[in-house]
Length: 202
Image 1 (spheres, helix red, strand yellow):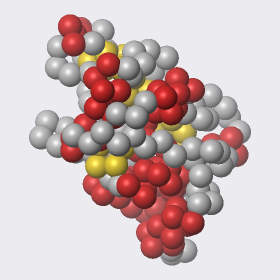
Image 2 (image 1 turned 90 degrees about the vertical axis):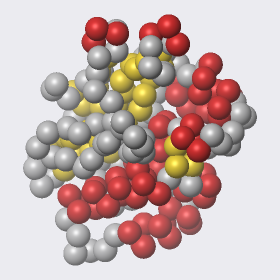
Image 3 (image 1 turned 120 degrees about the horizontal axis):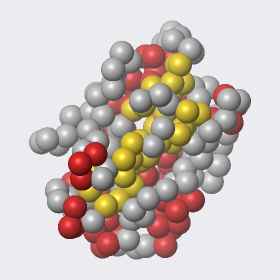
């Protein structure tokens, strides 16, 4: 699938915001621990991706009720759903001057269509070394889910099953779409939110 940036100004993908709060002391401390000047943008993207994928738990996987949203919250509590984890990965990479946006898929929330659908968030990352965008899914691996850092071909958490009306959206957004942030800000129980209230479409 051809990825389509919402904006062709890479600076739009480096902005700080309330939820991508990379100036926060916690983000700065982690940034200094993860990265150094000798690393390429590819090195930094892989390190950040694997940190968020492996060290930040997905709320549903650990059956936690805590809702996190801001990148600094996700880092502090080391947990969040895909929307929150995408905020943290964006914050870490933007702190290094690596343009990072937000991509979405429409997926079955569990394993059959009758159980409903939800939007799933992942990140689009622009690698200057290759002069192109790649997608990375730091949702977190588990049995049956194995996302990897890959430049040549995508290895995402969830292959799209079109026969079940799942969709892959090609746009790389500058900011998280508002409905994903709104649901995180509205709810206080992550498990209830995840099962019943995630947006189904863009």
